[in-house]
Every structure is written in C-alpha cells, then in structure tokens.
Image (tube, rainbow, N blue to C red; front, side, top):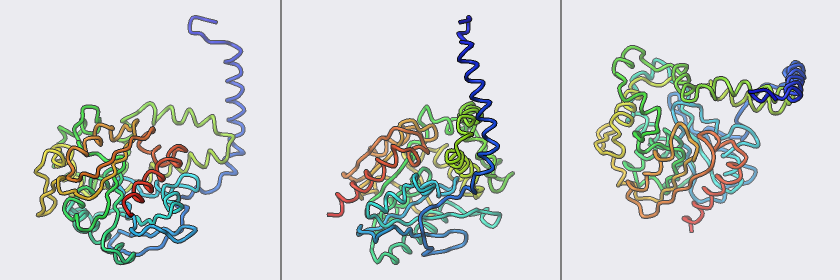
Length: 355
C-alpha cells in the first residue's frame, strides 16, 4: 500500500478487466440493434400544426372512466414516458386499467417563432383536452403534467377548472426561486429580450449544454467512463444508447414562449407571487379546486423538491396529496423502483376518487 492507497494486485485486475471489456466492445457494438423508443401501440386522435395527440392501446380495454392526458414539457421529447418495454410509465398505467393519451408537441421551426404561452396553454392544450374528451365521450379529463408541462397544466387547470377532473403534477416547478435551483440562479440576470431577439428560436443544442453543465463532471465525464463497465453487455449498451438518443433529441424552443416563460416564471416567480397573465386571463392557483396529486423526486437536480413541495400552500383544493419518490428527474420514470411504485401510486389515487 502506497501513500495514495493503491493496491498493485487490484490495480492490475482492474486494468485487465478494462482491457477485456474494451476488446469485447468491438463485438458488442457490431451486434447492437437500432435503438428505438415508444414500445406501446398508439393511434393519433387529433392533429394541429406540429402537435399530435395520441391514444395508447394496452393489452386489454381500459377500465378507468376518465382518461389521462399527459402534458409533457416543451424542452424534451415525450417518449421518456414510454422509453422501452421494461421502462414505461404508459405501459404500466395501461396495465392498471387507465386510458392514456399524450400530447406530442413536435419540433418547432421558424414558423413557430411567435407562438406565445397563450397559444400553447389556452390554444393547443385546450383544444387537445377537448379532443380527448370527445374521443373518450366524457366531459372532463385527468391531466398529468410533467416538469414544464406540469406548470402549464397548473395554469390550464386554474383557468379552465370545469375541464379537469383530477390534476397530477410530476417533477413540476412551482416556486421558481428556491435557493438550490441552479437553473433559476443562472437566468435571474439574463437579458432574455436580447437573447431571444438575437437568436429567434432557442437552439436545442444550447439548451442541452445548459442542462449538462448543471452536473458537468457527472454528465460529461463519469457517465462515459462508466460506459466501460457495460461494453460487453449488448442489452445494457442498447439501454445506454436509447437514453443518449433521448437526451440529445431535443426540439428548439419557440422564441416568444421562451421569453415569456423565463420572465414570468423564473425571473418574476409569478406562479406563486401572483400577477401571472396568460393571454388576457389571470392565473391564480387558488382556482385549482379539483383534487391534486403532486409527485416529485427527492434527488432532482433540475426541479429541487422544495420547488414542488410548496404547491399545497397555493392551490384552492382541500383534496391535496403529495408523494416524494427516491430518485432523480429522469429516474422517476425509468428506474426499476419507479416502475414498481409510481404507476401504482397514480392509479390508486385516481381510483379512490372515481368511486
């Protein structure tokens, strides 16, 4: 043992293991299949511009009386909720008897430069909710909003409470100025007008770089060093590549909506402080009077738990439930623990309110 505690035998074993795995990688990569995503069968029930609303089909007809419409964030592709056969929130909800729909926002281009939050929330989401209600032959739907999509869903539910039966928010920021929110600290002094006026739409690559820099060593170095450990495992390599594909398959952000979101949510924190207007409508979380389930992740580096926990202090409903799950912002959808716990928690909560 030397002063830095290196054991020669263990070091040699590790070097030989690494050499073997690197050699095996040539054969593994030759066998790796094209990594696809979205394992669950689905059909488009509504289209508008680049938006598509899908209904997923399970192995058996749904038993739930009210459908779930998933509202994902604009900054990533929504197939994270249906990534692969053994990592699918959608598949597990269907297995519980839920009727699941999802908004796919598509990829904005220059034609979408001037889309506003009003266009997204009182326009696209409102018409998607109506389309799902017509398709399912119901008056109201259950909204499941994820991350930024959860903030949008809160706004929608506050402005259109008569269209929402139950509201579920997952890893959703509510207080955008908690001390440990690094994204918020970064943008407080951003001249967002200059930023958007210069760029137009915000490039996806720039957004991805910002997210990676939140944990630069973990997300840019350790992850790829750890890749050596699975170079001889075809299934694990395909899982890794599938996740990498999702991370870097990000849409650009419509410039005007981005401007408003940064100013009103991050810099103004108006969702909790008040004064938020979407189009001509005032948004008050006190008008969220339907049952609310708030799910957040205890190790979330993008949406700190403190940013989500405060929701119960602001909504107008007496039927408020919050659940903290072990894991991170993405792990809450793809980890083994999440597959066992999250869909069951959502289904049981909804079932208790459908009696």
